[in-house]
Length: 311
Image (cartoon, rainbow, N blue to C red; front, top):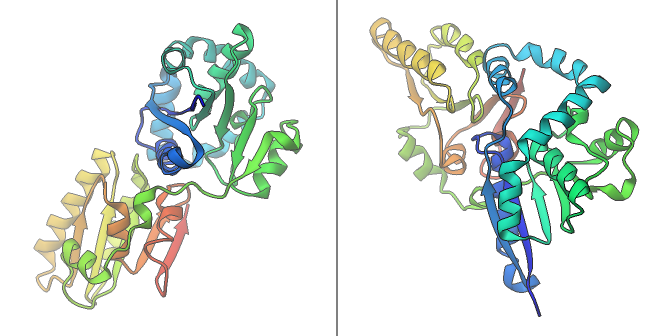
C-alpha cells in the first residue's frame, strides 16, 4: 500500500507560525507508522517585501497600530492586493510541493496558503490544502480563503468568524484547539529548572516575555522594578529583538550600581530555545497578548502558579 505524503509548511521567521508548524509536524511524526503516511517539514521564505519590514516595526515598537491593520484588513481592496501579491510569492513554496509531491499540504503561514490555493486552482493540482489559522480570537479575514479545503482554528470563535465574515462553509473549518510543541510536554523538575536559571532560594520568580520577535513594550517595566525591595527573580525573554535585549542589559548594570543590596536577580535570556524548562522554573508568566508561550506555558507551569496577559 502506497504511503500518503503530508507536507507541513511555514515561513522562515521564528514567530508563532513556525511554532505552530513544528507542533503539527511533531504530532504527525509520531503517527507515521500507525497511520501509514510520511510527514515532511519545510520553512520557506515569504516574498512580502516592505510589508514584512513595516509589520516588524509595528509589532515591536508600535503595537497599537495593529488596530489600524485590523480595520484595513476588512477592505475588499486589500484582499485583491493580497491575492495579486500571492502570485509573486508562489515560486518558492511551489518548488517544495513539486519536489515532495504531497497528497496533503498543511500551511501554517497564511500568505503561503493564499499562494498555494491560487496556484493549485490555476494549474489543477490534486493535493489537498489545509491552513492553520494562527490567532485564537483576533483573527484577520486574510487568514481565511474559500479556495482552501480546511481551516484549522482554535475554537468556535474561529468557526463563527470564518462563516460570518468570510463566507466559508462549515465543512471548511475544523476546531483543533491550540497546537503545542512536543517538547512542552516534558516532565520538568521545578527545583532543577530554578537552579539552572540561577535561583537557589525560595524567592518568587517572574517571567517577562515579548514573544519570538520581542517587543519594546517590555522595557517600560524596567523603571518600576527599581522600587522592588523584596527578594525577587526576574527572567526576560526579548526574542530576536536586539534593541530590547541591550536595554535590559543596560538596566541590569544600572541596577547593580544603584542598589547595593541586590535583592533582584535578573536573567536576560534574549532568545529561548528551552522554553518549557524555563517556564517550569518560574512562578508568574507575564506577557503581551499573542506569543505562543502563553498557550505552551500552561503545561509546564500548571498548579498554583499564575499567568498574566497584558497589551
